[in-house]
Image (cartoon, rainbow, N blue to C red):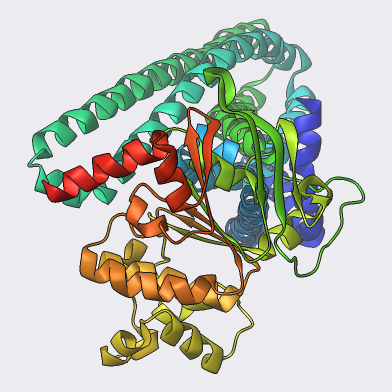
Length: 576
């Protein structure tokens, strides 16, 4: 907890000035609060009995001025304090986003995007509220409790001690109930993240839902998560209700104690009626900050739980370069996989002792049944996942000895599932090289056979394509992704099922663009449709993570092995 608090406090450093002013204003607000009971006591004991009405008016005017000052201070606290909290929230969001960009593929394999979004929005909002109100409430409450003790003690020490002797009992009960409430709110956070994930998934897949008329099924799935949220939130509110009702009862007991003990002291003559009346009025100086602290516990639990979840992401191990890693320039593309084995977690190895040599400028095809490990090889090359056993060399250098940035700058990837950003066509192409000129963007589009289509649009290159390029056809999205790679101009190209989801006419158009893209580059092609790799320089057949056969198309057909069987099967299906 101490380490977490220390890390939380670092976010206050850029805002030292506004934080100091906010705390100073909070201190003044708490000090001004004591003037009302002090003036009340003076009036009851002196001014009213002695009929000094002029001083009564003067005191009232002074009190009104103090309240005016307190109003201005409260405005400053609410406005500037919240702005400080928002800025801290923005910094945390910036840190989280920057860290997320550095996390490896494996992290995203195990964490839903929607749940990450929940942490970046809901959790950080609660942290922001705690950052602002936490110190403020603590300062005002602690100062108010101390000053109220000193002031009440001047009226009657024994009566004051009777009230304050209840504080340890209140503190013990609060700590016990707070722990219970903390656990309940943590469960509630998990439920909120889960329902957000289900909602995002359902909305993103609305077209599939409509196509299969499965709206009722989606409603059932949503309702399941919705009810889980209701149950989790109900448990949290039950714990919160127990906390508030119990602590409120204790503060009510204080009033009863003051009434009984004060009445007893008044009966014994230990306190006069004016002081007893002033004490009754002034006891709220103690009860109000105690109530504030009690109410603050809910906000504290939300904020702490949110910060813990924030740190879970911040503390996740990022991708990092090996010490002394080389920032390589443009590579030639001589690739060697030497005795590579790799697996995803507890499911065993996907690749088993794979050894391949891909020469510079060569087109090298990976074919074979689904799940054989072809895409895994493509993921290992740019170090989306790190090799566990064996090693991969490019131009004689182990890729683990290269910086990630320089390695990935040399590799371009075109996949079957194209991801496009919800922005303009121009911005999506520019993603391949943010420093490219408009002429270079147009040239890349022309080489990808998409320029003419873009020019036919009313807004041309500034056309917004919608979420994940929803306003484009599959072929148009694919050509846009090819233009992006043209702009990047890598020395190594990976085509992972780049045309498998397209119709024949569109495939021919894209194959022409890909042929242009592959020229002069080392190219690795993953394909199930064997007709697309007939002209590859080398074809490797990957079965169950092992290299079963390797050679040219004709050589593999003559072997009459796995490749020949796959080819004949596809040819038969095509005839059928």
